[in-house]
Length: 347
Ligand code: EPU
Image (cartoon, rainbow, N blue to C red):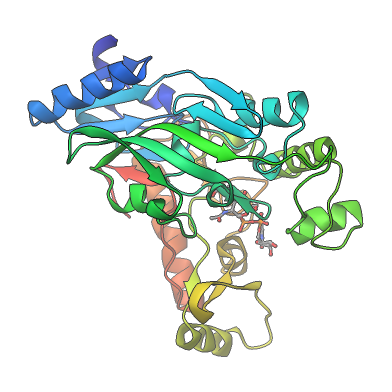
């Protein structure tokens, strides 16, 4: 276990934003993770658990407590069952699964920054896949009970960018994630996403070559600035800054009435609701790619990513986020909600 005092947190986030932690603990084994959590809980010390720092907006004042950085390792594949330690790099794990083992189930989640342990928390998803489809079990430390438990898929209460872990953030620390993958003889899972299907000239629901699917997703993501690249400030972001609004039938009707002749993207969602596109709303409200003149701007490749051009503070980023949220609300009556986890700040 490695401990430093008054440690800068900005370098641990993909936004490169946020003040220092009073204490930063880096844990390399599950035992170290559990010990650090137990110590903090016993002392009544505020605790912030971080993985890859890719979905995190930390205030400029930092965190007055213990930040626990999960740096555990473990990639175990038994047939089609994959177990990842929470600290494993997600994008690397996906690459290994696809390129070295030819297994399907997470190939469309290529290139997503962050750690494996973070994937169940927000039910990471992209290009028609989400981890809820393949996660069989999550091994987590339950801070309420003070013990390690194994939660089955149903117990994780997954929904769009949400889970039990996100709903009860002070209760769970993810240690290991198990996935049930599939061997389709070198083919991918069925293509669900229109953009990917179009790329291949196939119908939605067809399978394509597994490695080619992985490559196509990486190229699509890179084109949107959603693959980390130190030299490219468009990738100094927390990915999508807002969730895609999911509207009730009444809200959707009111939204359509405001659109007039415009046609917004619309996808069927749970309980008869309709999911529309935050990126589209931002764009149509007048915030184009690259919008902003300060040190925090929209990505020049995607309206949904708020980026640090190098000298931004969290306050700069939040000012931009508030301006966009207000502009979208004024134009469409829809309230955007932040997707990343906020620490010590709110919109
Ligand atoms: N659009 C614009 N302007 C833009 C970009 C997009 O108008 O600059 C519109 C287009 O109509 C496009 C639609 O927005 O069809 C959706 O864009 P995209 O396909 O890029 O997806 P997204 O809704 O912006 C979601 C996820 C991403 C995920 C992609 C791909 C959320 C909040 N975001 O983005 O996940 O990678 O789909 O599946 O669900 C993340 O959660 O951090 C994330 C990156």
